[in-house]
Length: 103
Image (cartoon, rainbow, N blue to C red; front, side, top):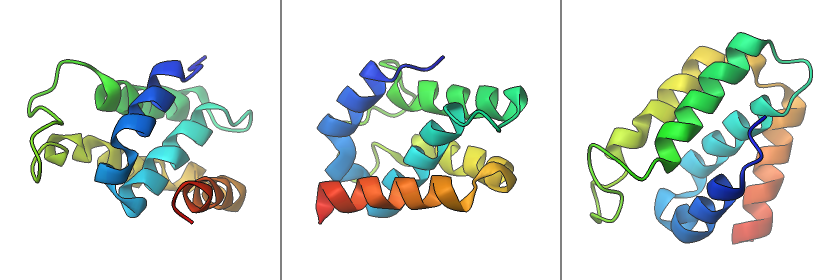
C-alpha cells in the first residue's frame, strides 16, 4: 500500500504553496488509500493521482511560482470522481491535519 514517505516529504516541502484547500483534497485522497472500506478501484485512482502529484517528472515543474501546480489539478479531478468515497471521517481527518499544520 501507499506508505507515503515521498508523499509526506513532498507535503513538507510544498504544502504551504499548494494552499489549504488543495492540500485538504490531497489528504482526502491519501486517506482514501488507507480506508479499509474503500474499493480497490477507488484506491487505485487515488494512488495514481497522488503518484502523479509527487512524481519528479512533471508537465509543468512545481517550482515555477504561480503556475507550477496547475497541472496537478489532476488531484482535484480524481477527488471529483472519488467524492462518493470521501466519508465524513476522511474529510474530518484531512481538515484536522491541515489545521495542525496551519493553525
